[in-house]
Amino acid sequence: MIWTYLYNIVFYASCGVTVVATILMITRHNAVHALLYLIISSLSLAIIFYLLGAAFAAALEVLSLIHISEPTRPRLIS
Image (cartoon, rainbow, N blue to C red):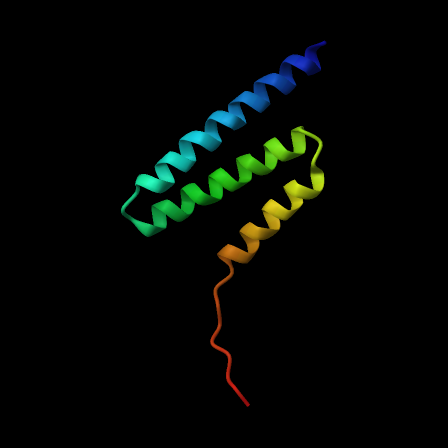
């Protein structure tokens, strides 16, 4: 019984964080702040996916974050 309430609290809090972080990400002029809000939005979306039973989609969301934050290196053509 208590787990149901906890599940609902975490789910709705994560939904709220996702919506607010996405709106803030779109409206920021500073690219660093927008990137931080993108990371927060993606992590809270991964929590939503996991709570809905889509653990694989949650893992893909986290892996996409790792790919976004990895700096690109110039490749030398040999």
